[in-house]
Amino acid sequence: MTPAVITLLVLAVVALLFVTEAIPLAITAMSGAIVLGLLGIIPMKEVFSGLSNSTVVLFAGMFVIGASMFRTGLAQKIGEFVVRRVGTGETSLMMGTMFIAAALSAVASNTGTTAALMPVILGICVVSSIPASRQLMPLALGAGLGGIITLVGTPPNIIASGVLKAAGYNAFGFFEFAKIGIPLTIVGILYMVFIGRHLLPKTDLSINAELDQDAMKEAVATSDNTTKQWITAAILIGVVVVMALDIKAIPLQIAAVTGAILCVLTGCLTEKEAYNGIDWVTIFLFAGMMPIAMAMDKSGAGKLIAEVVINLLGSNPSPTLIVSVLFILSSGLTQFMSNTASTALLAPIGISIAVGIGASPAAVLMAIAVGASCAFATPVGTPPNTLVYGPGGYKFMDYMKVGAPLVVLCGIVSVIIIPLVWPFFPK
Image (cartoon, rainbow, N blue to C red; front, side, top):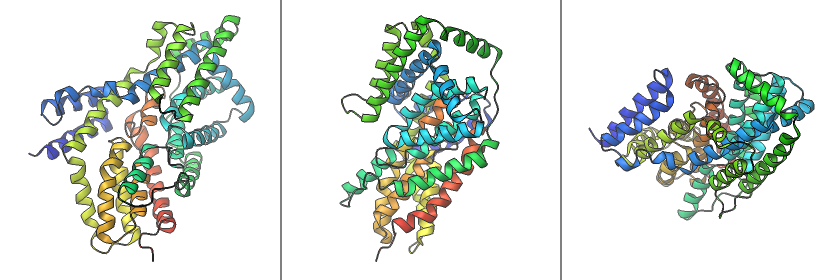
């Protein structure tokens, strides 16, 4: 068998284990990477390379800052403030959460936005007595949708624009994606409010968790903790501002880890509490999927899937068919590959498709980029989904139940809007 076929078989087994959860997700992801290494599909030195990935480091840093927010009582204080403003209703909180996440993700990293807001939302859930599982997935979905709105909101947009410019065409403008991103965000929020929330699980706090929350609420009353709350707030604001400004000299992971270190050095939490605050399931889950995504690219497995589907277009396809096929292909791959890898794989092929059928490259790449950003149906499709997996107490099928209908809905909206805004066969 060819490396591409072997990779696809391994991916199929990984996907099956993800769906059934016969073994823990983190073990499935790491085992898939190990098998690909043993079979020679990827170099052995790359099997655990995901553990040093910048996104994994970002996760760890923000988990520690989140732990500091809880240990000092800052998250609870913020939660109480927000609850007084929007009320304790689950639906109003969901709308507020998704709107804020989408707005921030439009100008900042959707991963950074989710990581920064997650402890705040958890605090709101504690104060409102709402299970975290009812709000964390909407947070991740809101961040994912909001990222589509601008050029810098999510990596697929930047990659698609770069490929377009490299091919000799005009690059996408900063707010050009808003023409499809804003409608998708509005539709996504409405979907979650009226349909998606009924599909979310309701995971209650454990007895230990309740005791921990009680202890933290008592800690809020001490003056020492009030000082630490202000310190933690200053650290969080500093980290978020640096992320939002996208300072090239200070990558997201550096900002997050620096913030985490400051939390420990200032005594906002101990070293042991910092380690305990990291959700290691999330870390190993994402780290295990990175080498698998690499194998999809290097072995030609991803390209093989792309070429087979592209042949379905025929010689004289309609714009609706083009968007449908490219969206299905891109969104399908991105559920198990990073959206960055999916776009990087498909964008060059998209240029060839456009030239071959005489279509607008901008329209083709827009369909690919938007599809790659709709990674809502699995916990490994995009970092925000992975980030909330552990704290929300979710199962793989929870993402399928809530996210798959949203992907279909986004596909329908894309099929309607993209050909209108970016004509495939301009006169």
